[in-house]
Length: 166
Image (cartoon, rainbow, N blue to C red):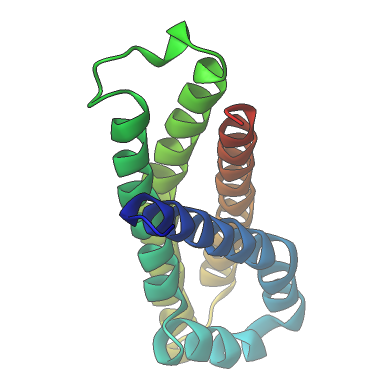
């Protein structure tokens, strides 16, 4: 029999799958490909980010995952009344929750601003290229690449924590 909780759980799982899969695809394939192709990557990445709205899709997936996860956590803990460390799987769930929140905060407050800075640097580079600007672009690309893997790591920890509940 269908229940609203089945829908909430399905949305949580689908959102989390898209979020982790998208983050891993970006870190493992898109960013290295963009770096390797140099200036021509700007057109592709611009289309991906602006026209296809990848940041919006990632934000929707992360928000859906967090909101549905909060509802599920509320249900599991009896309205946040039971401390999750007192029942089997509770520590794993808590690790999963904390890791997911950190991944969200990392993407929102670290990665997104860095991506915007890189975009601005690339625009400057097209208008008046210089070795100094090129060095700043490379440094920001490296920062974003490493940051992408940090986000993936926290999402994987979150997934592992969630699976320990079951």
